[in-house]
Amino acid sequence: MALYAIGDTHLSLGGNKAMDKFGGRWTGYVDKLRKGFDIVNPEDTVVLCGDLSWGMSLEEARPDLAFLNALPGRKILLKGNHDYWWNTAAKMNRFFQENGFQFEILHNCALPYGDVALCGTRGWFLDEEQGGDNARLRAREAQRLELSLRAAGEREKLVFLHYPPLYQGYRCPELLEVLRRWEVRRCCYAHLHGASIRLAGEGEREGCDFSLVSADALNFVPKKILE
Image 1 (spheres, rainbow, N blue to C red):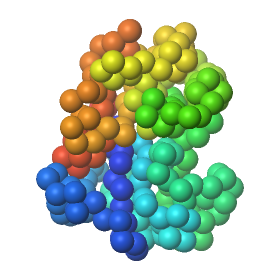
Image 2: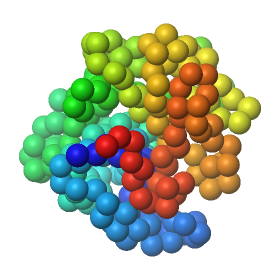
Image 3: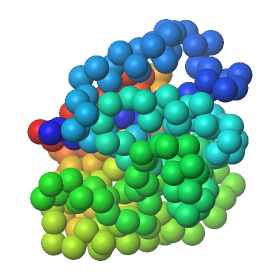
Image 4: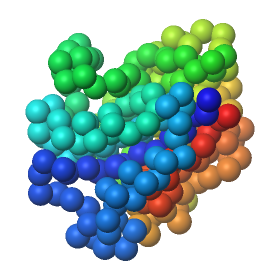
């Protein structure tokens, strides 16, 4: 049994927003993703760290969710900034059940993985804050992460985010403070693509080990987090 993470699959199997048009690593990315999951066994767990489908509704996202569902392993979904199909947990779970999809949702909660608890939220990011109520949005995501960590109880806590809490020249102090206060030792995040990958803050930073898991950064092969 192993724990993996990957984000930003950006599927568009029922639409017209396939990422192949960007070239480079994105060329043939659906096949790369399918092949990349060859390392995942049925008993393994994969946290999918947001931006999973370009669908604007659950119905539009159905082909993409069907593709992800068919990949091996237990799959846990986290919300990204482009997951416009995301809905209430009740509506998503009903949709998953009606379509035979075996997904779990990581949102304002904690999910078990052996003796470890998987925690997370979307997070917030500087580029998306321009012109918005930055303090309010950062505080909201910090509160959601706090709820998730509290739900984990006394278990060791691993955190998964969509947005990076830090990268070259940027820190999200509210989220980093929550990570510090709860003594989180491992945090995975996605969102960064292309040239931005080099800005990622990885390795030991401020008492926590950070990993970038966006799909193109991993060449569409899920990153092993734990055995």
